[in-house]
Image 1 (cartoon, rainbow, N blue to C red):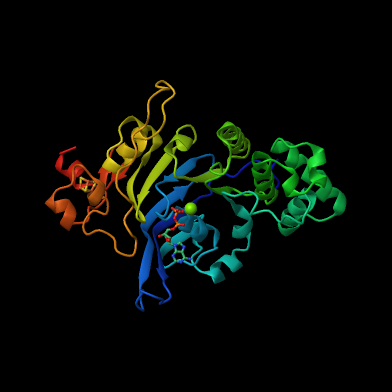
Image 2 (spheres, protein in one colour):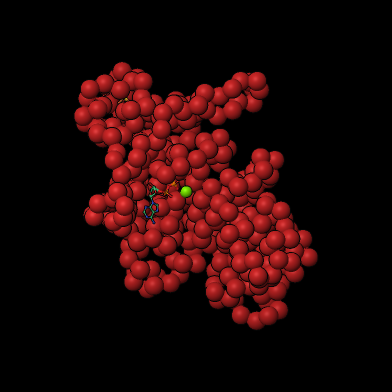
Length: 332
Ligand SMILES: Nc1ncnc2c1ncn2[C@@H]1O[C@H](COP(=O)(O)OP(=O)(O)O)[C@@H](O)[C@H]1O
Ligand code: SF4
Ligand SMILES: [Mg+2]
């Protein structure tokens, strides 16, 4: 399929009950057999033309999920399915070679993810060749077409990554991903390394490309304000788990989990320019020694004895689910 062809509407990428456990090597002060449960029972679905966002503080497991979806990390538990077929093992991925092309990733640091010794034309040509395009003239024409789609001039093809600004480099990363004619784009903090003034341009570009190609996005960020105008669905993660998982409309209009509420309060507001947003109090717990009960309880103003003892289960709420005893009990 070329990108000019009609886009199939039936594709989807689904993760269900996804888990990732890292075995840590023993070392000074670290006994043998210690494990980090980086991702615990996370489910999500990516669909054409839709954006699912994952938000949460650093270390909560977002990048690990991204890597499992693109096959850069093995899966400890749960399942990944592409159009209903399993994609759990490396063997299954090899068989479904097309999956590699269909699921592309855009990384946080556009400099580290681009080969500094390659001109842009070669970076994109390699992706085009990997996705099956043959012939120098065809590759050159397609390279220029893709550069234009991401808002870069033709002369960009002859330059090296270091000759561009951060925002332009991220455009090159996006161009490289587009060269594979993907259906799914996993964007891991795509604007975090960029100046604020450039962030909106890259988000607008991503939105424009999604509209043109019906791309399914997983947008990963620690910053809820980034997802506000992009996401259709939002998963809020804390210590490897989804604590609130809802339509963006419901989550932004009536956030239910105390952690989500606090994250939303920390967004700087355009209508209150002088307002100093509150900081999230307390430290993220050590994932090697997670709190008992609800993992958020040491930082939660609504915590009670049940919260300290019993891990909350996901309950159905408007537009999705939330895992909080206080919501279930009607205390919040
Ligand atoms: N290769 C690894 N070995 C051991 N622990 C890891 C590894 N990669 C990530 N982790 C741990 O897994 C947790 C989740 O990390 P990560 O997915 O990078 O979080 P985020 O992207 O949300 O910042 C963290 O506690 C991190 O230290
Ligand atoms: S379960 Fe308890 S500690 Fe956890 S978020 Fe809800 S109220 Fe707070
Ligand atoms: Mg990360």
